[in-house]
Structures are given as structure tokens and as C-alpha cells.
Length: 399
Image 1 (cartoon, one colour):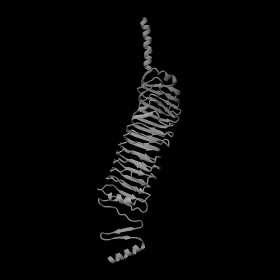
Image 2 (cartoon, helix red, strand yellow; image 1 turned 135 degrees about the horizontal axis):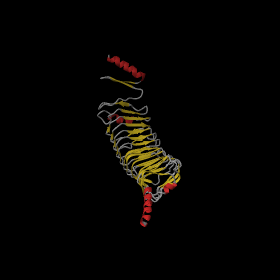
Image 3 (cartoon, helix red, strand yellow; image 1 turned 30 degrees about the vertical axis):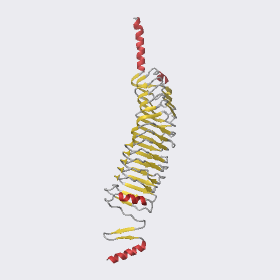
Image 4 (tube, helix red, strand yellow; image 1 turned 60 degrees about the vertical axis):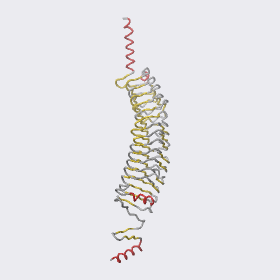
């Protein structure tokens, strides 16, 4: 009997400890005491969520692994959230609408399934000493973060960073992005660096002041640069873009250099980049699977290797494009290099040309103020009143 007197309480204590370290549903944290009660768990099996009424400082210390999610949704009174030993989060790390959160400290966290941090308007810094290295997706939106120090991803399917007005830098060691990379509407002086990025599906950069992707070799989907502040963009090793390639409204951009690019599977658009005077950064480009559409203030377009444009070809500039139009016009036609509708026009001195041309046929061009009339045997050019009298005389002479 004496043995049972000690064994039974011991089993009860062990049972309570096991119950604290696992949850068939989600373990809800109401206060700092609830968090402290989990300190003896090296591994917590299940998910942990902060109740909306939780206040103050929440420290999930001692836990090394959470197999499920860690969630705080619309918890508007927690100022600090930390976990001094957490290395692995098997589920999602979701923080949403934590309006007074100022400190986020997980110094050993290296892996999480997904990171989703949205609407954390007081969060100014991170304490991730080891550095978060692996996640499937990273979403950081609407924070006061000045840097992402401690987030140095090696692998991710998607990275979306937007509306962080104080963010100055994004620098990650990612090798590939299998879904999407989007950096938009952050601090005006943000510099973006992906030194090891070789492949991505989609990349969108907006409102960025500097960009470096020296290793990028292929984009399977679309690559877009919109309303950025950098003066130059270079992709020295990029060879293919599977869908569209766009440069739109980058007001300071004066140089786009893609020396190895050979193929764009969709459209190629360069529009409203007011400082670009010459488009010559695509020396090896051979194929554009969609439309080629350039609009701006440029005076020259050089595409020396171009062999196949399957969509429309449209060059529009405020500058004289005489030489450029004269070069590309003979390449247009259904069985020619430019297979879609051809249009090229610039300043008033530029000969215009438009329309879908039959194979081997060029569209007509003339000097501004002149009109051309043609028949099977006679072509007469009319220029001003004197020319008109000559035409009348010529007509009577033929009758």
C-alpha cells in the first residue's frame, strides 16, 4: 500500500506535465502565467494561440519546438512576444493586428512553415540572432521595421514584403523562388539585394531605390520593375524570361542592361521611363513571344539579334526615330521577323509606319506636309500649291 501511496501522485503529476506539453486542439494563452506554465516543455505538440484579451509581455521560454502553429490574431494589448529557446516551428507563425507590439524576440528560431506578419504598426525591430533560414512563404506587411536583420532565408517558395514605410534594406541568401517575390511600397530608400538568387517564377519590384540580383539566370513567369527610384538595373546572367518583362514608370532609370537575355516568352514593355534616351541593353535578345511595346523619350532602339516578334511591335517616342523606324520597318510582315501589327513613330520628322504588312512589303512613309498618290503606272508627290499645279498639268498631259 505504501508503494501505491507514492506512485499514484507521481503518475498524476506526470500526466499533468504531459497535458501541458500537448494539445489536441489549440493551447490558448490568456496571460503571462499561462505562457510560463509551458516552460518545462522542450517540445510542444500542437498549436499555441494568444487570446485576444491577452495583455503585456508574453514569454514562451524553454520551448525548443512547436509542432503546430503560433498565432496571435487581433491581440491588441501585447507589447512584447518572445521565445528564448524556440528553434523550430512546424506550422505557421501568424501575427495579425497586434497594434501595440514593439518587440519580437526569437533569437534561436531558424525554421517555420510559413511567416505571416501583417498590421504590426509599432514593431520597429526584430531579435532573431541565429537567423530565420527556412520557410515556405514570408509575408511582412504594414510594420515600422527599419530592417529585416535576422531574416536571412536560404529557401522559400514566396516572399512578399510591402507597405513597411521605414524599411531600408532587404538582403537574403535565397537561391530560388518557386512562386513569387514581391517587394512593394516600402521605404523610399530601400535597397534590395539577392546575391545568390538564380531562379524565380515571378518577380515584382516597386518603389525600390537599388536592386542587385547578379546571379539571376532564369525567370519562368514575369519580371516587372514599376515606379522604382534606381538609375540602373542590371541582370548580367539572366538568359530567359518565360512570360512578360516590364519596365514601367521608373523616373530615374537611364540604363537597363541585360547582356545575356535571349528570350522573353510574353511581352516586352518599356514605358514612361523618362530618363532612358537609348534602348540598347538587350544585345542578344532573339525572341519576344508576345508584343514589344516601347513608349518614352528615347531616340534610338538597338536590338541587333532580334529574330522573332510574335505579337505587335510598337515604338512611340517624343524624339526623332527616323533611323530606328527605317531599320525595323523592313523586318515587319507575316512571314518576317515582326509578325504582328507594326507601328513606329516619334517626333514630327520621323516617317511613320503602321499596319500588318504582307510578307516582303514595307509600309509607306513620307515627309510631314506631303501626300503620296499612286497608280499602277504613275506615282506623283504633291508638295504645296506649286506641286498641285504641276500635278494638274501632268494629268491633262496624260489625257
